[in-house]
Amino acid sequence: MFKKDFVWGVATASYQIEGAAYEDGRGLSIWDDFCKQDGKVFMGHSGDVACDHYHRYKDDFKLMKELGVKNYRFSVSWPRLIPNGTGEVNPKGIEFYNNLIDSMIENGITPYMTLYHWDLPLELHYRGGWLNRESSDWFYEYAKVIAENFGDRVKYFFTFNEPQCFIGQSYSRMLTQAPGIRYSNGEVVKMAHNVMMAHGKACMALREFSKGDVKVGYAPTYCYWYPENENDPKEVDASYEKSFKTELDPNGFGWLSAWWSDPVILGSYPEDGLKLYGKYLPDTWKEDLKVMCQPLDFLGQNIYNGTEGHLDENGNFVDTKRYDGFPRTANMWHVTPNALKYAAIHLYRRYKLPIYITENGLCNQDVISLDGKVHDPQRIDFLNRYLIALDEAIESGAKVDGYFQWSFMDNFEWANGYRDRFGLVYINYQTQERIPKDSAYWYKEVMETNGEKLYEHLK
Ligand code: NOJ
Image (tube, rainbow, N blue to C red; front, top):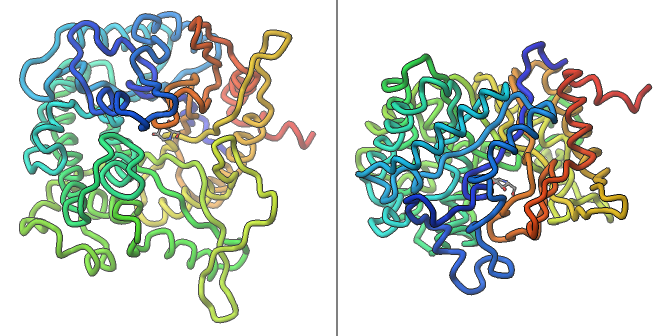
């Protein structure tokens, strides 16, 4: 059962919704640059206008309120606040986020702020980005500005969103994310190390310079393994081990769970990972762990899908073959509710921190029907299945404190541009009209009934 004060919410991110990319002194980010390069983003789309939330936030929060949303995870654009990444602060940026936060609060919405959702100031990229050892100090300075200006009204913070993606997919592996430049494994391991240093320093800054008592977490991601036979404790254990293993990835470095969370939460790099990648760490790595590992109030985690596995006749844990016609979302991701269940179970087992699911949702080919509405039964069914699975995780002892659906509204889906729709609210990008989809009304009832609505189909 979801606890009485379970945090139900929705999520977005700055570059994906704000627009106003060239207004009021905002500096450029690596995404502004990436979108201009040929062939990087679907149909040459960009976040220049996006959902125009920069100008429409008041109406958006009114709509959120109407749709029963009480908790909202959003991110700050670093280059809007500090155009060059370090140094001069943009007063218009401060004003915008002050207004945004005040407007949320006026509408009864609790802010959950993410510091970094991928829009690195372009200027910092030119200075070496995350490979520069100074990057953790840049981030500390940015976190200090945030704490001093917003830490009186914002109580909940997440430092980084999905480092697996903004490092792994951006500098290694598929290169589908900005800046999309290949670096060697040695360099990428150092970047990851610097990001975790930045996380640690930001935790310190948020706690030191915020006026009130703030709660700080982290929001990585992963596709966890779950057991085919849930009643077999050995198979459950094997799925746990597999989920936190560090294996060599022929495509590059970065798609890992323990590597990104053990240092930050447990104060150590995983042993199996050190055997593979330890040689690339800076000489100071053992000392650095003390900076990275700051007490956290909760662990955020973005979960979309995962892989089922079982023990074969030799006792090896192997992936279970997916049957023909296995359900997928519109961007071809598999529909695997138990990935959410076991993400919560495995993560709580390893880290013993309260968990917030900071993102979960599906991409769908939503259209405006002849009746003028947007019907999205696929989204309702997906969310219903995943949330029942999350409830099961809670039943089995995982401490889950909240869930943020991705996303409140359709938005700029990175390299897939506006092709992929994840929103509860449909955006007509020609007119900027907002149309709540059927799922928005359904989710409203889920939140209002604290999850009871999920079991309506059994009645
Ligand atoms: C993860 C990212 O944090 C978010 O920005 C993205 O839109 C969703 N997943 C969907 O791909």
